[in-house]
Each structure stands twice: as C-alpha cells, then as structure tokens.
Length: 442
Image 1 (tube, rainbow, N blue to C red):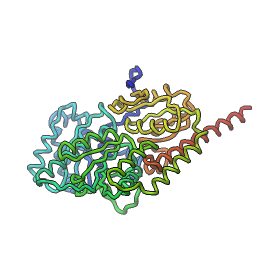
Image 2 (image 1 turned 45 degrees about the horizontal axis):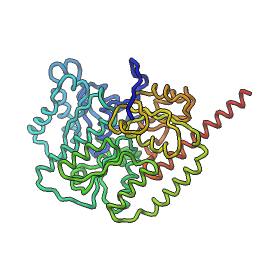
Image 3 (image 1 turned 45 degrees about the vertical axis):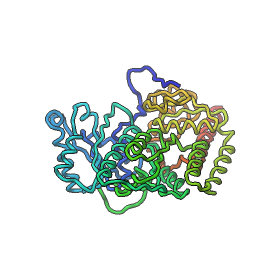
Image 4 (image 1 turned 180 degrees about the vertical axis):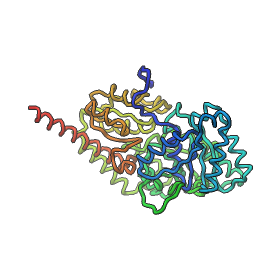
C-alpha cells in the first residue's frame, strides 16, 4: 500500500516530534548519563519540558547554548566548554552529544572535535559519542533509534580494543523501541526471563522513568542500564529488537560481532504476543509458563466480553510509525474499522502496511477520521477528537492529561487486554453521553 500525503501549505497541529527529543529519551534509559544538545538553549528546553510533563520526573539534559555569533565563528568552542563543565562537575559515565539542525546546516564538524577531545584528555572508563539529528528529518522514533545505534558503535569500538569476546548463549540483549512505556519494557524483560534467559535492555527506561521515589537530587540520569551491563550486553548470544526502527542497531551488532538478531515489529495483541512467546519457546526449549497461558485466556475472554461494544465501531489513530503498526494490528483483531491511520513520517514499515497510511498531522487525522468513534493519539489530539465527537484515548508521546500513562502496559496478552478494556470503557462512556444529551434535548 502506498503512503499518502494531503496537499496543503503548512502542518497544522503536528504529530511529528523533533529527533533530538528521541535522543534525550534514549539516554534517560542509561545510568549516570548526560545528554548534551549541541544547539541553542531552546533546543534543550523543548525536550526537557515535554519529557518532564509526560513522565512527571526530572530529566537530565545539558546544552552548549549556541548563539548566532558562536555558529559563525566557532561553535565547537562552546561544545568544548560544555564538556569541560559536565566532566569536572558531574563526571557522567555516558555522554551523548546530540547535534541539532543548527549545527547540521552550519556544517559543524563536532564528531572530529570529540575524537580529538577524548584523545587529548585521555578519557577512559566512560562512553562518549555523537549523533547528528536535525529536526527537519524523521521524528522521535528515528532520533531514538539513531542514538542507540551510535551508542552501540562506541561500545563496539571499546570492546574491539580488548581482544576476543566470550558469547553467553543464555543472555539476550533487548532493544526496546521508543514507543514502549517503562511498564512495557519491564513486561518484555519478564517475558524473556521467564524462559530462563538473562536479559539486558539497552536502553532501559523501565528502571529510570517508572515513577520510583529517590531522595536527593542528581543532575545525571538515575536508574537505567549501567555502563558495565551495556558492555556486557555485547556478549549476548542473541538480540531481540521490538519495533522495526530498532533493526538498524540490531544489524549493527550483527555486522560487527556476528550476534544473530530477531526483529518483532510489534508485541501488542493476540498474534504478536503468540509470535513472541512461540519464538522464546523455540529458542529456549522451555514450555510457555502457565501464567501466560492464563493471560491468553483472559485476553480472549475480554475480547469476547467487549465484542458488542466494538462491533460496528471505527477508529482514527495518529502515532509514530512503529506504534501505529502495533495499534493497527490490535484494532484489526477487535474488528474495528480503521477510518484513518496517520504516521509522523514515512518508514519502510508503514510503506509495507496493507492498510492505507497517511503521513501528516493531527489536522489530517481530524479531516480523514470524520465520523470515527474512537481517536487514538497523543494529548495534543484532545480538541480534534472533541470536534469530530470521538472518544479520546491518549497514547504515544506526550500524554499529559492522564496520570500514570507512562506505566500503562500495551505489550503481551496483559497489555492487549488492558487496552481493549480501556477503549471499550471509553466507547461506553461516549454512548452514555450521547443518550443523556438526546434525553436533555427532547
């Protein structure tokens, strides 16, 4: 199916989010990390504000605070000063330098500068890498994936200087996509470990952005996967990537170290969960744990219970490409008509979808989804859903109108059941609202 775009001169209420935000999100899943955005102060204020609003947690990020004259004369001077301050004051284990459209258009060569900086100061025992992520390309998903790939590159180079590696066949590296919540990542880790494997998630937001209570303040990330575990992940016998966008970092590990990998485009819904558990059963030789058999029964029963609620209903969804693919499959299993599917940008995954996909914004979702009963998007879609009188189901990023959204589960049988019940309840409330309105107008 081809991807379509509506012809209009400007984007209205964009669903697309800057790549640099995806990079900052990826680094939040690494312990004692510091994202350093090489751009203006606004380039760091935007991701920090949105991430804080979504997760309701402090977000670690620094900036080189470029201004016009800095870009013209020597942008790398600001970067060097920022690195000196971060290293001397905070001593992070991981530093990710995130290039913005400002430095990209100006042609700033900060990758070479970083190599020289590390060599001159003899930086050892940590991880420092750079990634170019201008906002006029891609979206949150591509920024997240590119950052994980850049981290893998730097890790591989470090291990390359240490000689041959030992492969642990009972250890699996999990590469979770940007659309997964902290609770989703935890659920996937538990599913894999239930078959006797040791799991290292890179990055791991399940232990950093999951709403835990910590005393004191730290300018660095708290929780997440430590650097020594990240390096240990290079010894894994297998890589499992969840989300098509994570295939590039998985393939990078395969090309450099020979680590085989398996990509699951999604892990939401009955079929996707069946595929994941069947694969884990095959590679482990272990039977599927009884709790997942029960969860499958629970999901089937909840789908049956909600059958009359979803019958004849239609939905519109506007999300990042990987997330859109997963949600579309789940809606298909519920028998819900998909009036419009809107992605933030074009990827091979949405190109290959059987259903018609539009690359656009929330205005496109409103126009194309007119008459839909259910609207699924981030919180910026609330007003559009109200105008077409659809039940609004917040998902993706950012979600700021609902408490605990970052801990909702969508993967596995349990996640599909939670989503099915939530969507069904929203449709029931909408129907009840319509009945009350008609009674009042009699």
